[in-house]
Length: 162
Image (cartoon, rainbow, N blue to C red):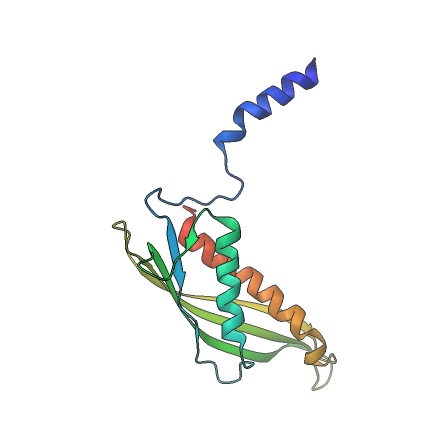
């Protein structure tokens, strides 16, 4: 009996809270993401295309919005503004213990339907790896980790009331 009561309470309140935390105006139905530009000096070729696709996937998988190139309700424009590897943690002597890859995206959000103010914001995240490690061996993991966090941050800035 107790389990039925607990299940009933859970079922009753399951419609009151969204675990995705997206708060999208009902009048917004479509989105478009312009291909990101690459203004980062040392960025890998094609990285801006991958990041554009990652944002498209994030919105497609985590919202009800439909992708539409013609007259979209909201638009995203982006620039790969930074891609740098820096030495972060000193070690004994003149050695470095940790290197850091940092990727920065400059994003513009445009709402063509509601009176919401458009915004421009930089989003940045990093990945640390041991300095003795060849970057090419951690490159995919680093870019994937950074991209996941950047897309989460952009999605939350656009669709969450946090």
